[in-house]
Image (cartoon, rainbow, N blue to C red; front, side):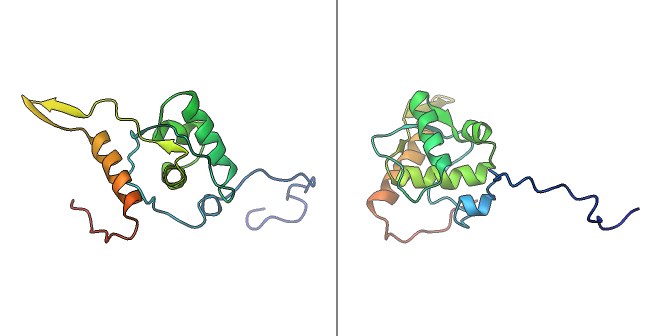
Length: 142
């Protein structure tokens, strides 16, 4: 029979607690990170600790980054969560100093020109946002 399920076709409730948490619950309904992060942004563990109001996934993120530097995409893969949700959690952890942005190469060279790397610019922007949280944010170009 096609159509809605009958009560005989529904799975039985075994009474076990589900570990599944919806993404919007995990991020507190937020869809955008406060920091400019890309999928290839590399993170490492910092001196701080995740706050008490943060989800358990934040503890996992910090543990993974303290073990080895990891990208946002890699963290999303380890957690099995969407990249956008991981960016929101990583942003919270950057604010708590539980994660930092390592600067491995401050400058890149292209065609004989030396310029700041994207990693350096992201780290500088994160530092400025932290130092001046009340500053007016302008829309990004592009």
